[in-house]
Length: 485
Image (cartoon, rainbow, N blue to C red; front, side):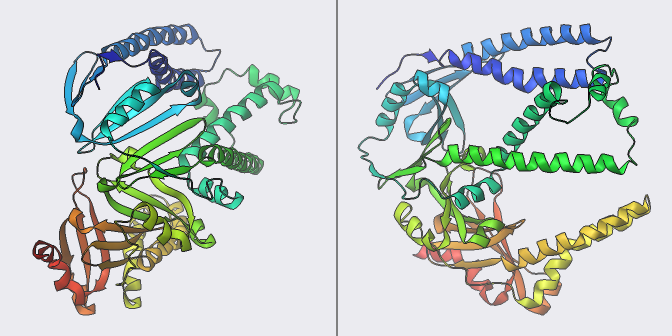
């Protein structure tokens, strides 16, 4: 297959303009107006700067789109981009690790998609081309693949499952919060009096208020208790409304979740308004993560993620083999889609004797910091009321720390906040193993075990704290045994 030199679809130029307006013009203009007020004497200058900035960004958007070209040949992809400094890159087809596509509802209507090609080392190139060209490109790379289509029985998850996914989708929550704030601002501006949110007198006063944002903050009566009550009520309403909107977005995103698989790769597809389509070669899966957020654990759920050696951090963050699954189904899911892996159970844990050490490590720096700041202001001492949060964090660190290693895998468990993560990594991707022991640990006959992975990051190390020293020799000789196997 060969494709002549071409550019992204013309619609991508509009997307460049949209991104520039969203990321630069609107925030800068909004900040300027809020700072000086809408009726400020600086308004003509703000408008002029807005127009000039718009022209500059429009030219930049056009040059970005025009200078980005690509040509796909039988064994090579020729890629060029850059505005003031143009760069050409030749990429051999065999260096492609995975191909992922995403699209919006509008792009789907006109038959185009975003094509992300992930390369060895985690680099990425991005095209916007027709779905026909994408299909031909995939056929050229994945020659001989015939999909055994399998749709997960619960692709339409239950109400509680959608609700749990919503609690862990922070980006969707921020999107929802932005939509709610926009809607609230619109209602307050146009229907505040009718909805009882303000009186007619307050509305007229707000319209004639020429103070800037800084001046408003300085003249606010912060000792008025009713002010805090009103803010608290509005904040609570917005949080509830945001989660309701986020639930709808999660439902729309995962309602058609399904997986296709062959002996060589997994294909994950989900999304309706913004459709995502990931190819995950099985040979490139370095690790399996079983992620258990706090609320997931309460209801007996987890999510399964694949760490792909060919993907960068941004793409990898989205690659959930299953966004939510009952814990008793984890083994069957892993065996079906990633048969090279096994859900190895963690065998070695820190003993109860070292629990005070875990808690002490989490609170000591907080205590020292609060005491130091208390010399500046006594109000800082109220921070000790939050000390139980760090104590709970130390307890969670102790409870979920664990390790096991076999001839094929290293399995470790650890916590990130209130989330438990179990990481199952193939032995061939382990770069080194190490054991660290402090003076105190010598007395308790424990040590910190750590292992480093071959990774696109400069350093990727995982540690398991205060495990019995009895496994030290075997762990240090782990990779030597690999060479003799």
